[in-house]
Structures are given as C-alpha cells and as structure tokens.
Length: 436
Image 1: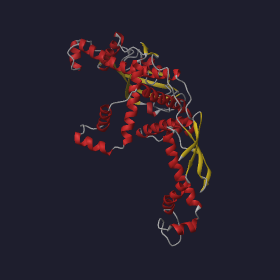
Image 2 (image 1 turned 90 degrees about the vertical axis):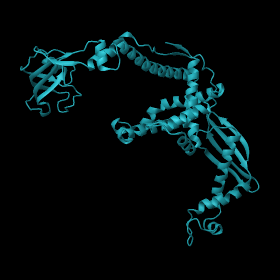
Image 3 (image 1 turned 180 degrees about the vertical axis):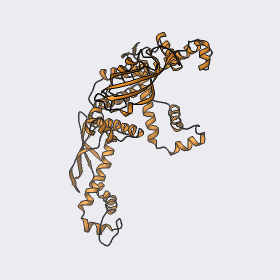
Image 4 (image 1 turned 90 degrees about the horizontal axis):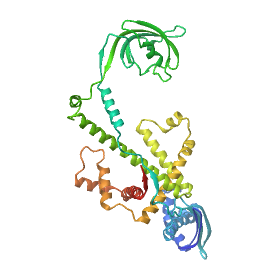
C-alpha cells in the first residue's frame, strides 16, 4: 500500500492510495463468503451456494465491488496510522481511479480530521472566584429558618394579624353569583401573609375577629391550584373560626439541646458556618472552573469540524433523553411541551456543543504538552468507586477483580480520559491568577 497524495485543506484531508491488484483478487474470497450469506440461488440454501454457481448467477462484478471495498477499508486504516491522522467522521467522496491487473488499484477519499490545535495562552489566566466565607448575616439567616421550622402556634383572643395561622369557613362565587364548589369549605386555613390564594384575601382577613363573617371580592392568583378560579376575580364569604399566633422559640443552649445533638448555641453556629462554607466552596470552585474555561476558550480561539459539533450535540441529546426517561417522560412529549422540534433543539444545543468540542481539543493538547495523566492507581480507585456505587456494601477484593476482567478496554480508557481532563483543569486553576 502506498499513499500517493496527502492534501490537507482546513479540517479535510484528501488521500490518494495505491495497492496491488492482487490484494483485490485475494479479497474476493471473503467478499464471496459475505455475499453468499444472503444469496438466493434456486436449489441452494443461503450461505451454501458454491462460488462458481454464485458467479454464474450474479456475475463477477459484484464480487469485485465488494472485494475492493474490503481492500479500501483495510488501506484506509493503514493510511490513517501511517499519516498519524485523527479522523472525526467517516470517509466520504470515495472514488476508484484505477482497478486494473496491470495498473493496480488506485482510489481517493476525503476525511475530516481533528484540527491542529496549538494552545499557547493557558497559564496565568485571570479569573474570578466567588468568596467562600460564610458571613454573620448568612449564619443568622440559617438560624432564623431553624426557628421558623420549630415555631409554635397558640390561640389568641384578638383581631387577626399578618403571620397568624387562621382557620375559617368559606363560600365562593363567581361575580355573576355561581358557586365555586372547590372553594366552598366548612373548615380550612392559611397563614396570613403567604398570599397562598390571593393577596386580597389575606389583607381582607387581617383585622377580623373569631366568629366574624365578612364578604369581599378578591383577584385569585394566576397559578392557584383551583383552575376554575385561577386568575379570576371572585366573591368570597368568610367566617373566621380561630386565630393562632406564631411564637418563635428563643435561641438558647436549651433550645439547641432539644432539637439537635449539639450542646450549645455556639456549637450550632459553628456547624452552620462549616456547612455553609462547604457549600459555598463547592459553588465557588465550580464557578471558578467555569470562568477558567471561558477565559481559556477566549485566549485560544479556533474553528472545529462540523462533525465534532454534531457528535457533541448527539451526546447532549442522549443525556437529555436519559434524564427525561428517569423522570418518566419521553423526548417526543418534552418537545411538545416546550413547543420545539428535534431540529430546533439541536440548534439550541449547538453553541454549547461547539464550545465543548473546542474545550476537549484544548485540554487534550495541554495534557500532552504538560505530560498530565492519571496514575494506574488513580484509574483503579475510580474504577472501584464506579463498581461500588449504589451498593449497600462494597464488593470484596475477589469480586472486584472478577468484575474488572469482564470490562472492555474502552471502559478504563474512558475513565483515564475524564480523569486526565479533571487533572488538566486543576493544573490550569493552580496556574491561574485568581481574584476573589
């Protein structure tokens, strides 16, 4: 096999390849075995027709066509290795130039390959990272929510106020006097100020006393669960049955001991601070990484083959479909709900897919340049984490080894790929100029 021409235009490489005609003749045997499986010749079962009978029935042109395809596939793989090309799509524009016993077999093809990425600006990137310290105000807000959760309600003898829990009987009508059955209740309740049904309703009840009846009009919230009333103006007749005042517990050591394993308010504050800062650190790390990616792409802009973008869109769509299935929803139903078509959804994903394709290429080249890769121990640890995920008890050593032997090589290769990506991003973060 010889490569007569290797011409590159942007992402497309055009190859002209020559091989001996003898290679095609040799390939006619596997071509025959392949074609004979589906051959229909009277008097013979599929796959059992002798070659001379097959050739008499179908001719030799079909064999040569299939044999040449086999040879082209084999030569293509050899050429890719020899020229160190990284295809991102299947070959196209395949054309046989010569197929002759004397002149040999010559054919051309075109294939899109990875672009030649040469990252230069990736160290010292200036990025923003949000602060990960918990403020006193944030800690007090958490404590306030704890007090709210443990609030008690005590009956009071006074007019209703905001924040009170009120019980009432109600009748509801449309403005033309038709009863609304779903809003006619002998007893129900709400916390004033939440505006659950309508701000008008809560405001009208404020100031009422137990056993007082009041009739008034309200504009019901548009998202209210009673569809026949949602967004409508209605008339409500309300009889107030009870008023309970919300009493928040005092923040004391005794209260802390009552609701938790902590022994003091100071311990609870420390725990809240630690939990907040753990969450804020995760958020800050994630945001810093996103900011780093944006700056990396800005500093190293280049075009990518359309095939790579399509591949990333396909991955995003598969992930979406899997997520929808986990929630009991089909993609077709999702498209209907969002008023989209499959094509408009692909277009929506395209900008993110293009960025992802560029990022993958950049990280791959940076990892090569900086000699970044996970150790065998790191890959093995991640593999064991995956195999043990979702199990109540971890697999024993012999079970782990048994599972590992059943996995294809691509499984470990995929782990190595994303671990390399993570380590490369960590390298870039460690070499970035971070402003908090």
